[in-house]
Length: 568
Image 1 (spheres, rainbow, N blue to C red):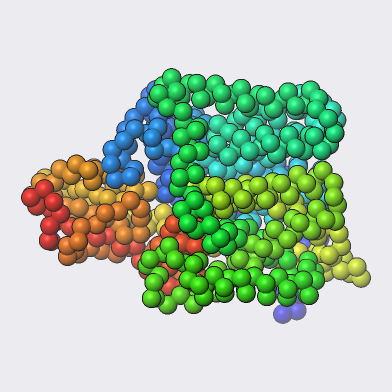
Image 2: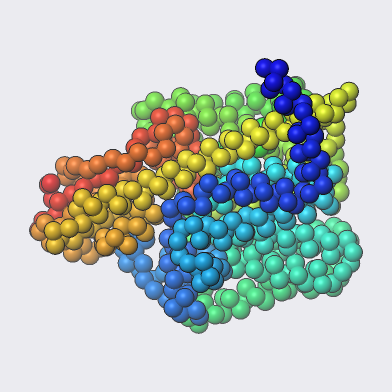
């Protein structure tokens, strides 16, 4: 014990702290590589295949990114009718693949650069908002939504990188009344919107900041015309190519699929709070007694617990999850209450910052956080961790601002306060890595399900059909499996149909079946419909991740005859 105490208090700690303070960008780059390096070989899963397929199309036809058909909803249709995101992330993938190749490692390395850009941008932005920008950047990095999203090849982290650097240039341009940083911000807003449509929300956000800072319109406002013109050109190009307005189609899709507009309303707000609290768990780890007063904490916990209990007692919060009816769910309810309290604390932190400072920077952060939250809860097609991600840098900066006010240090012994913060960050990092590991194991299991399906049933001259999508579809299709078009099944006697049960767009036949199992994550899952984990979609679960017994990945197998799946 004395040796550990000596090591903790030894010169290595002071030297490390001094080096990190002197080289913050190098320290952040090292932290990003260490955090994401173990996941570079992660198999493609969830919506990754859509981006990879689009990138391959771009390699062959650079000016027609969505000009091919895909079976993603159980029926064959044009890619432009399936993809709800603009193509810039796929163009980035295509460019990276042209240099590094198409392997999982190569493409994850390319997206590691976008994660690094997002974290360095958060550090640069935080320098304008607080005295602890390194803490703000680390609090952003070590959150489940950031680490999990950074292990995909989807558009979210790349959009966030453009978003943060657009905010950096805009704030600096407004402060110095400099045109070129503002024009650069306008260009980055356009790139963010062409990566993910949510990036267009920067236009009103930064416009409000400009008006509050300058008290009048000036040439700065003209820079916001850049993304508007670019998006107008994008709409014209997609209409010319596909006779369809892809931007408005995505907006219509989100409004029609949104839980808010399909009856979930108030419950959607509670679920969104749980996703906020769990996805941004660094706020919880950095919010013990030195961040919030005990009386405020007790009031917060009591109020949220009563609210959640009211929803549970009325049966409204979990009403849409049919698989839960009549089943044991105390553990899940307890976790929902816990992470909802954490989510409320994030919003309370935002309100407290505005109340304390009442300046343009506080309002920028508040509008950033609340705008993202309301979009996720009310207007997006589903509540998910990827939609919470854009508020991570703002919350990281808010935490640093709060701790800077002396709440995170011990006035009699500042070193004790700093070590407490480091311990909290280390705990947050470990927790976020555990969630990212669960997502990694799920992707590995999906690929293994595809491999075993091919090895067991993809021979003998018969066709191996499958339902289900995500990574299972990507790998089984590469091995010769055929995605089933449920509108026009083309079975022959002796064909096999396989179906992973923890998946989407399934229409299982009501016949006896056999199958096999593949082990995935054991005690923590971020996407499992059977325990209520729905990081990528709250339609599969009311929390971004759930602790508990995680069942293995099950693949059902059907023999086919007379044009239909039959008894095995």
